[in-house]
Length: 184
Image (cartoon, rainbow, N blue to C red; front, top):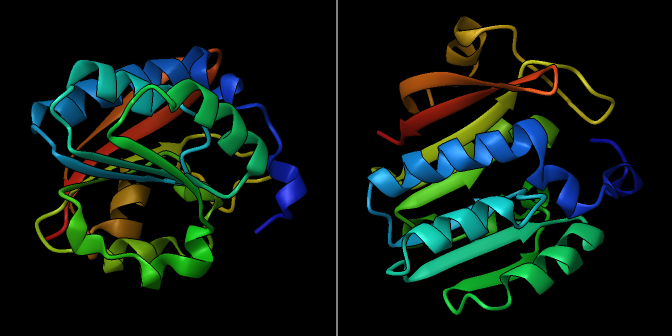
């Protein structure tokens, strides 16, 4: 994984363009399942959490985590008004085994391409948990992987999660895949 200095983008960057379009669509998809206990890891920005929490005030727990101090500080200011939301600094690559995955009915990751242990993390998620992923269709210096199509995504993750559907979001010349799945 690139050094932490590589991840000092402002959180607001990920609340615009293709990222905001992705977050709006993910919020719709997540809300359709009536989640009550959400864990969003490697979040990077406040935008998705805010959209989900605004849409469904009955959410009991929204655990938001990232490992970049700048994103955490900016997101903490925006999400402070949401009592169900807790924010924390967490290096999920290093600490995924310490997470009580059974505490959540929904897990979200919009930055799996940055994580070296992506497969181990997905395997740790409790059975019957709904899983929402955003995966890039473009390379970047901090991306450990990106995907050219659905087949690559299925080859990498289908033995770990039951993929219900894959959608594409476009914006600003960039494309993202949205994966809707669950742990069997």
